[in-house]
Amino acid sequence: MSLDANSPTPPSGPRWLGGLDRAAPWAVVLVPVFLVHGRLIADALMALVGLAWAVRVVVLRDFAALRRPWLVIGLLWWAWVVACSVPLPGRGGVMPLLEAVVMLRYLLFLAAAEPWALAPPAARRGLRATLSLALLYIGLQAATQFFTGKNWFGHGRWPDGELTGPYDKPRAGGQVEMLFYPVLLPPVARLLGRDNPWPLRLAGAALGLLGLALIVLIGQRMPFTLTFFGLFVTAAFLRPLRPYLAAGALAAVVLVGASSVISPPTFYRLVTKYSHQLSDFRESPYGVIFARARAMVMAHPVMGLGHDGFRNYCGDPAYFHGWRWPKDPTDDGGGPAGCQQHPHNIYLEAAVNGGLVGLGLFAAMAVAWLVTLGRGLWREPDPLRVGLFVMAVLFLWPVASTSSFSAMPLSGFFFVQLGLGLAEARLWREGRRSTMG
Image (cartoon, rainbow, N blue to C red; front, top):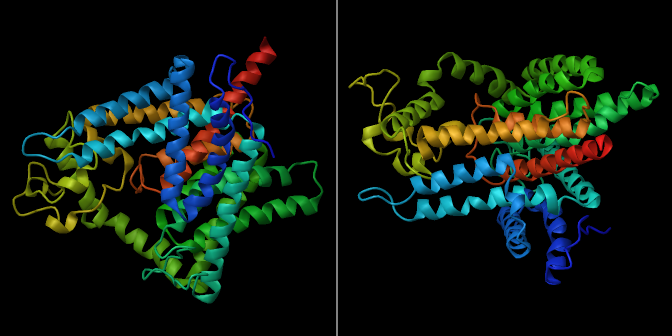
């Protein structure tokens, strides 16, 4: 299988650039493999692809490639977070600044994937194959753990009942949520085509239900909630699938109810504990985190606390603040126990790191990504592009408990699929221009 780029290196460029053109697609295709096991290798591959693209831009002086709206906004956001992370007297060291600087690798990776690394059709097919294998592998590990009590490495359920899939911690749910729509929606939509015989349509329905059963039985609340929400986002674009999607939503509810019998730990996580935390959100660990992050932002509304500000400063008593405002002296907002590695919401994280300016730039970047991914979908709802768009909506949805924006491997699955989505959207635009021209 050749993964040579569609656009060869111009004659004016050095011959060694052709080696980068050939290597970059292979590197992207391998990223999902190492996101499952070997996230440092996956991170290195993404960084190298982005760096190779940047070198290519400089050598060929192709600076027009920097003018994409989402990339301009993203670079502004990154530069602002770097500025906010510069060490100040009495606050912080050099590590937050270095971590903020190297965040550039994700933007460069996306910039490389869209017009270059994922330009060859074989590269996009190869990436879809490795993403599918990743979902299959995680699913088989979770199924083994459900039926036998242990995954292939001997790890059992997490103490609270979640299936951990191939890991020793509950990470599988978020990854299945990220992979669910880009991997499953295209084959399910193809099998459910109106002109197909009923055995094929039955196979499509079974494949979709199998995916829903997996996300239910894993038992992680937010991944299940967002995946369920994604059914309605999908229905907005794919009208022929609406009856099936409605049936899928009903089946998911039935599966959750049935879990009270077939998997009580799952029912406890998805229903009992979830409902208690929502009804008493302010006193829950998530409410404590929100109050702590809000206190940090209100104390530093313009420039925030720099990269990783929540983890670095959540132990400062100045931010021990409950929900009442002005501060109730009897409420310390959980005190030191309210500290976590991140504020469990990517928008709160952006606000703590870069203040309200950083939050605004981050939100604008998210909107620019979604606008780019969604262009033309209403008129021409290709299932792959719809699946990639839904994936991005779920990751960027503001009302959710999330991992840190840059936390591997979950963010790695987001970035690599976002790169695929941007590449597919670019191809759609180019095809439309050539048709109209």
